[in-house]
Length: 385
Figure: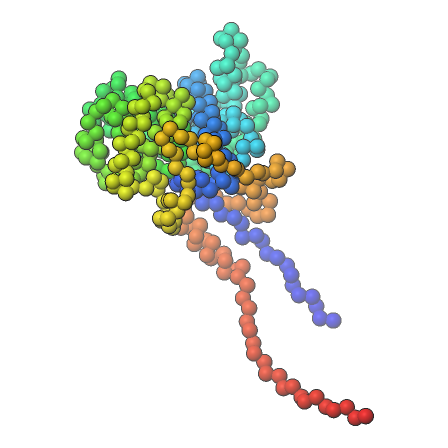
């Protein structure tokens, strides 16, 4: 009897997860659709989490760079994990805990939870981080830290627009106590949107500067693509700055009370600025959202629903029905699920990942050869009765 064929299977080639320092709007929308997150619920969870991080970091007197990194981790975590897998407060605490390590502003998980608790109670009821009530919750936050780092693909590169914005504010002659202070608060409110995932440091700084000038009735002709704020010098474009401005105005139009600058100005002020920018974008044929190079231009019309002035896209006029995910099912978006069948490796350089994948595919490619064989068929013999 012939020996059985060798059916041994070699090691799994492993999964490679490439870091994504920038995630555009179309990719963000696909992630939210994949986890079944409606836009109304996403706005609510996003604003609650960022407000929680901002309040706690102020209580702990943490620098603004820690706030920036924590919010980036929080945004990326929510793009991969459905809302039924975690509590937004736990995710916010884990994001701040991870950012404290990254920015070398170390805080224990119990200290973060204690600061959040003390913000909700009177001063005579404040407790210390050693209180036993934080023991179980602290372990939960530490457990979420691993998922937080995996969602960020272990990419510890961060962007701090405030540093550049302060320099441009001084160079443009902004008043430190009025327009300069507004620009600083705008840079904090910007992290309540997805703009930090999409834009560069210079784009965010220039957008905050321009919106502050418009809110204070300043002449914007001397700060729009001229002088020290020339877009080419900072490797940005009017389309990117316009997208960032409209993201901020979406926040102030629909969720004005959940921001820092919003309650300081009437709603009509933001709507008036938005109308002006919409007219400029229409005249210059600027898209609402930046597209990837591989995406067709037609997708801009059929992709993400555009917010409209005074009307929330999730209002009863335009309902969105999210998909449902059974709590008993494993989250298909979680990176750790793939690790059950093979190793997940994280890389920062996409070219190295492509070269390695191309090299490994040679050993897993199934090659088949076809042969043509001519067989002589003998004529059928007649049976003799």
